[in-house]
Amino acid sequence: MNDMSQILQQAQAMQQRMQEAQARLAETAVEGQAGGGMVRVTLAGTGDLRGVVIDPSLLTPDAGESAADGEILADLVVAAHADAKRRLEEAQQSMMRDVAGPLAGLPGMPGLNF
Image 1 (tube, rainbow, N blue to C red):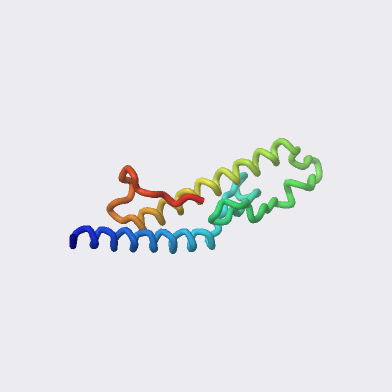
Image 2: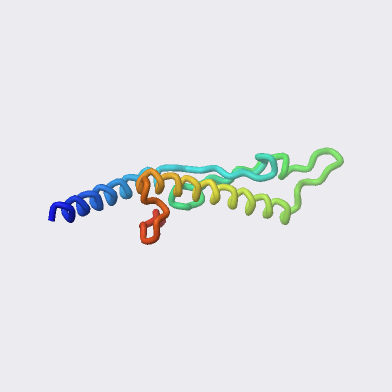
């Protein structure tokens, strides 16, 4: 019986750590970029898009040059979003490893789902 109560206590402690990790991740923001930083996208830890910054040089033509066309700009925004999403997934995985410790990655272990 002692072993079972110890397992339940460990499970409850892990659940508490997961809730704390989810709260920390929800407060986290990650930035992705494309075009050498000319387009930057910020995602909240929940995956919500929080901001897009586009370098003004992409919007205004310089002397003898034309501004980036819509398709190129759209591609840069999509690439920046993909970069931010990859960084967010890395942060989520890192937090999961911290919470689960040596049990991380084992079949049946819960993940951080947002």
